[in-house]
Each structure stands twice: as C-alpha cells, then as structure tokens.
Image (tube, rainbow, N blue to C red; front, side, top):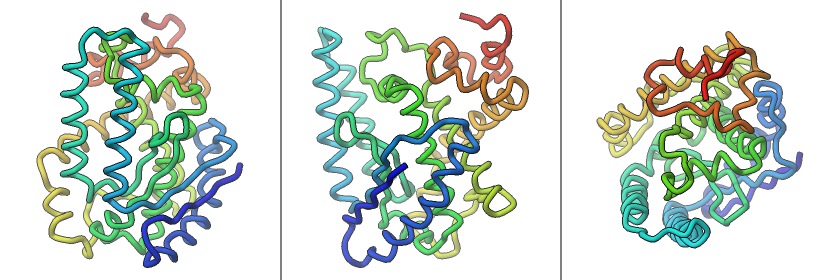
Length: 275
C-alpha cells in the first residue's frame, strides 16, 4: 500500500504532517490485520484548514446532489436540499470536534482528512495515541469503502434514500460501529488497552469543551457506543468472516428498527438470516 500525506493546513503544521506519515505506516497494516479487509492500493491523508474543508464540502455535496438527482430521475429535490442544509449547518457548528474524516471531497477519490485546527481545540495536536486512534478509525472507513467497491459509502451519503430503496437501512450505524470497534482493537495492539477519548484533554479550549458537553454530541456518542457494541457482539458470536459479508450483501445492513436491539441485527448473520 502506498500513502501520501498532503500537508495543506499551513507551515505551522509541517511537523504534524511528518508525524502522520510515521503513524500511518504503523497503523495501516493493523487495519487489515484487525478487520480482515485490505486497504486501498493508495491512500491520501490531507491536512486542511477549516475554511478549505468547509468549502470543499459545499462543492462536493452540491455535486453529489445534482448528480444523484439526474441518475435517479428525481422529480423533486426539496427534501434532498433540506438534508444538505442541515448537514452543512451541523458541520459549521461542530467542526472543532471533527478531528478526522474519511470523505470523497473529489468524486470517486476518497481520502482521509485531518483538521489540525480541530486537533488544537481538542488539545490533541501532540497526542500520538489519539492520532493513532484517529488514523486507525478513518483508515477503517477507507477499507470499508474498498471492500464494498464504493457502494456502502454511496448508500450512506445519498440524498435520495427512498429512490435507492434503502430508507429503512442504517448504514451510518454499520460504518461507525465497525470503525470504532476497529480503532479499539488497533490501539489495544499498540498500547495494551484501547485509547479512550471519553474524557476531554486538559488542554482543550473552552469552545471545544462546550461542544464536547453539548446535547447533540452526547446523543451522537450514545448511538456510536450502541453501534460499537453491536458490531463487537456479532463478530464475537458469528466470526469476522461472517461479519465481513456485510460489505457485499446489502440485506445484512441493519434496519433502523434493529439498531436499538442488537440481537435482531445479529440474527441476519446466522444460518437462516432475515431478509
């Protein structure tokens, strides 16, 4: 696997770029070892300013909405545009807690984005264990995308779930639960115990702490924990190979009605899975 670190967040973060190169070299093989999923042949890790990140998301989300509408023959874009506005509004508010992200800012080219300004707010700029966790988590997303040949990300990011026939499926629950499970396994191999970010750094900014303790983030974390536990149970009971069928078998993706009851989702991986 080849990886390229593009340090575009300004010269003050050049040292971070070099550290990310070293961390990626250690973390990438562990992603495959833990998940059983091969990494893409090439991985781009890009540090960005928050301003450029926001602008890139505005461009890519507008392109995605227009492209999907044409491909799917959408007769109305009202709900899709509302979904996009909400998505961008949340990003504008919550960016200090977005330390890393795997995203195709250019169509067909997923990459791993790091926001040094967010790391600074979080007090994690020099926290190598947390950086290993972030890269392990986000590289797992890249492996998911490769395993599903792009289909799982298409499903997660769609602005037209009804037209794709997946409105009842919870791809976010699957992808995040699996990535959090993976980063726990990866950091345990590196440090002997999972690297935990349940408590903020003592160096975190007041702005970060306000968002960290916000009701919105608390709700998101509760869902993430439930998703992580669900993935862990399925892998423990059914095995990793059985779980990894989810990347090419859409009927194994959990229904939204199943995400509060892990046992219902687990049954999909048994000898007589539900449809």
